[in-house]
Length: 302
Image 1 (cartoon, rainbow, N blue to C red):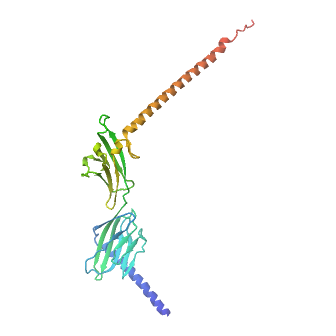
Image 2: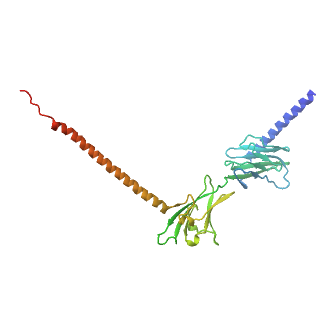
């Protein structure tokens, strides 16, 4: 019985050593091969999963396979050896990697730093090798943008016939995004390219009474998600803007009177301080000369 156990343990140890030798042989073999060019690009978003498909030609019966990533450092992710799937390797994807029976690698939930190049090395029963490289790009989910409305009303004689409006759109804490605008409520939903500024974030429009029901939408997007916000700018021209909308004319009507009042108050206090200072100085001088003038004459003895 002991002899059987000893033989069984030796066989298991020999199998493990053979597996490790085969694995290192594959890694060395791939290192000697020319570097494969970046293949297909896989796009996904933070919080979701991505499937890296391992593809091979018909008749290529895979015997062994190795998945690796190369950013920020080279790491071993998953292996297939003698019908056994293994993903318990120390990497940043530990616990987030799943190797399917078709040798495709699923990663998730994804994080913002998971973008990079991935490679799978496959060996068939005849010893032929096939290397496939994929590029994974992980994007943030686009949040709802914020639109600010700035108005520059024309002359009073023309109001409310003309109103110049600037719409500013902004999405927080995100990169690799594009901005676009849509005019709602009309047959022509596009906007003129010459009215866009700051890479499409700012839109300049001129409104009239016929545009009171026209809404404008700011669309923020990246390759995997998008979001939008809508505003009716004519309301701001009539001083009925929603909270957060600002009219330069309204600001001036408040700032100018307050500034003048503060200046007048400052001048009044300065004048009062000047009067008090002059009066105190006069009293001190009077106190210094009066005793000397009123002191009686004393006859000195000869």
